[in-house]
Image: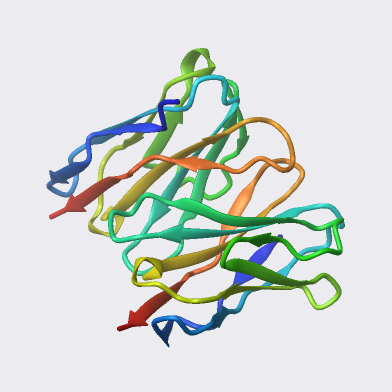
Length: 113
Length: 114
């Protein structure tokens, strides 16, 4: 069975600085997809970024980028130029070929003004 | 494009009562998920539908939880009877078929069992 582990329950970063959230996963599959979702206090889950496992190039979306290390089964999220609106819970998620999506326990990100 | 709709937003019930949640996915989305999110934790997958068939319900407590997706569109999740530990946010999500498609989430239903 696949598992997703986020080892940082909480993180804090100064506004305009860079922060990296960690995620590791366990799977025996070779084809899968990884996602980072953001959940603000309003609790609607929003996709931040996605990565296909067959792609070696790391995904980027504006200030958000990932460091995908397939052999190490690691998928970290880097947020550059942090903004107050980035404060939220961040969830790492794994999607297999059967479209099953499982989530980590999340990291609460605080932005310090 | 309309998003995933869920109702009600909030529900308070006494233990041993029953409750039902409703979800209307995005039009055309074949896959529908129900997740349970206990405060401070990540979403836990309860059941996954593809059209009106169940793909995965391995973590659904079947002695008290049931879900259906008639006609492959709307879905309902029912708890009967509720326990205190069922207090959580119940999230519905939907997605297109295909490997690189994201899941879109509703705003969830916050259930409090007293």
